[in-house]
Image 1 (cartoon, helix red, strand yellow):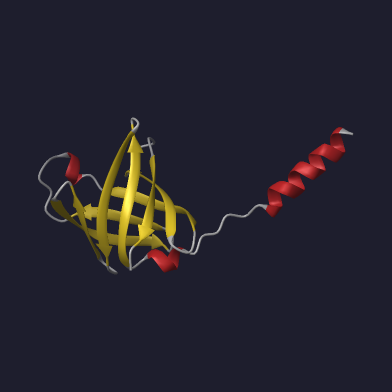
Image 2 (image 1 turned 90 degrees about the vertical axis):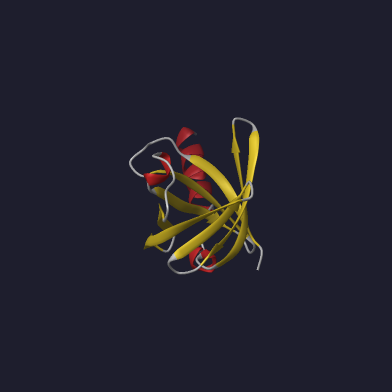
Length: 122
């Protein structure tokens, strides 16, 4: 009986496959939402092949992009203003829909990750 439940569980696990059409989200304009300590942080950004320009709290920040693969990218702040901005950020797209993607990000080399959702504007 346990063997039957195990086979059923493995079958259902294999049937579930999250969608990741990451190429669809390499370029464009997006809004993003991240929840940290029960507070929502929203930003808007425009991404080209090599640059991302983000507006958060009426401040504009620009980063150079280095794509590792279609679903992972490294951000390097172009004009860092403090020590935290000197650290590169690694972002990984986890799942996609027709108009949004879920991602996780962290400073390069750190294990603590945050999750967020980006919605395509255009």
